[in-house]
Image (cartoon, rainbow, N blue to C red; front, side, top):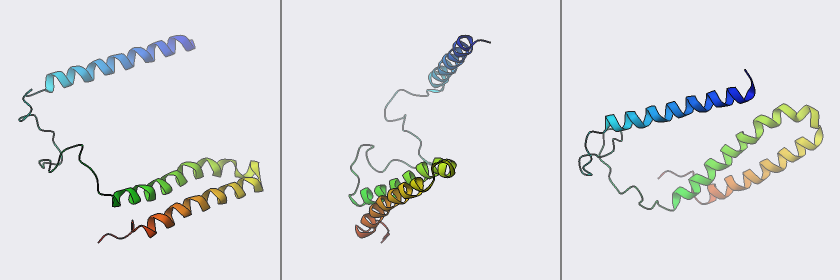
Length: 116
């Protein structure tokens, strides 16, 4: 199978999947009334509006999450090339980790690790 035929068949499969999902959504619609078509969220009624504001303390928690998340995103590929790159890769990674630690220290100072 040539590359063009494979891409075209994959495109066809994707179109069929999208059409099936749209069809399932149309068939599964129970009511179009806004008050009776409340979204299901763990069996609980929503307590606030979907676009309500978050408390400012969650921004520090978000920074802490991003620091650890970005660390893992870059450390996995780094482990694959460290032997080929040599000492410069180790220096670059420790520089990167120092920047992330600065973000974690900032989040800690702002109270992101306190849950009271």
